[in-house]
Length: 306
Image 1 (cartoon, rainbow, N blue to C red):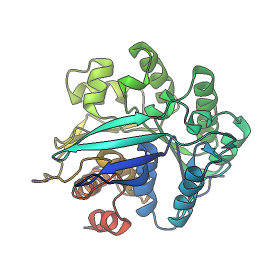
Image 2: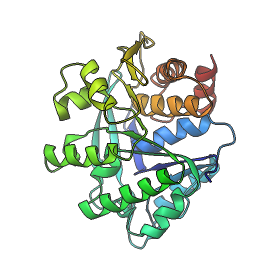
Image 3: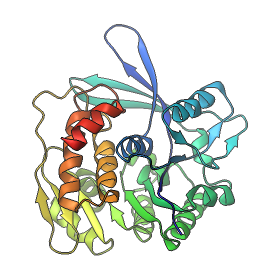
Image 4: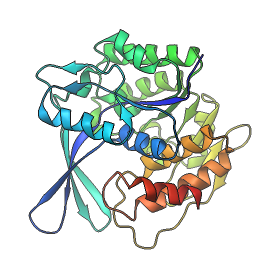
């Protein structure tokens, strides 16, 4: 029997965001954590678990403390002696962002090092979420361990959601990414791809092609495409849902991740796919109007319920 909790698997890094002047602001972010942040904010009393691996350094302890302060646990995630978190810096040009990473020896790369602990973290979850970045930071053996744990959770009743989130620099070869992502889709109930990523990885000519291709593999698909309409493929032909236009975005960091979190929260609450996309679009539009990947909970909730 599953519980009502939600679990997200991946890497949360130290985030340095540039402000006016020479100073930097440090926070915590990463694609699957950004999604869990929004999902947790919009899911009432559902327990939230971030499944990863952490170092035993002060920054890792601060990270786990930050999660706890915001009602997010880490399950049975291992603490790796001598390891530390990955780090990235955001540079903004207008509202568009570029990233510089230091993540080669991050603790999260060992998130599947203890298969029993990983399986325990995923036990009895209503939802398990992960991404292509989760896959990319793992070696081949660890990917197999991860997907086996996800498949086991799914077999015992968990809904599995996956965002392919293709980032070429994280993969040695395009073909390796294609194979790993197809393996992940085989254990997925709900896919949340972004069209430009799918075009780059699989050569899809248009969002419709992405929706149709993935719709043959997964029961429910939502194709994101920035300010263009999202496409839903579930129980029939793909159908568009218009996005929300933001005239002057401040920072687009985390918009797609927050969309995913809002969509999943809405679906878990019983909303139909179209209504869930409308709510997710509103949340993403709110996120691009604040700085950083993690918008305040009250901002997310106001947009979700608007």
